[in-house]
Length: 116
Image (cartoon, rainbow, N blue to C red; front, side, top):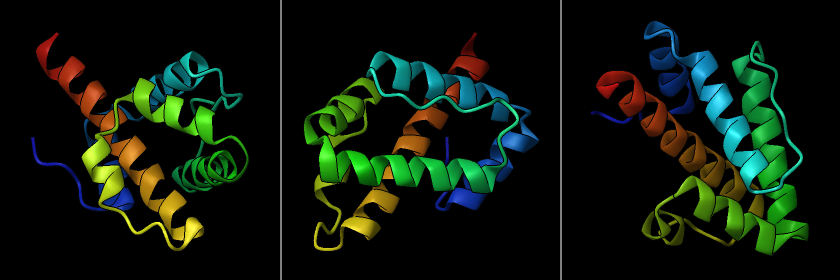
């Protein structure tokens, strides 16, 4: 599996494989498991998805760091990838972490679709 390098690439691939809604369902499931109040509608536009996810991650880093770490653990974002990010600019960090979250969720959906 080749991981998309950009948000747009990931969304494009999800739409091509008709898995965008499953990606949203997976995101909702893991956010619920992490006890974070964020529920995307299945028809959410990719631009809104990106904005809401980024905003939520930013607020978690700023205000609820423990919940943020718990979310990364539940989603299973590789710690090595998070540590490799530049933590100086929290806005940029939250954007990058949002993409890591989406990539990991995409992996789950893609593998489930391919091997089930």
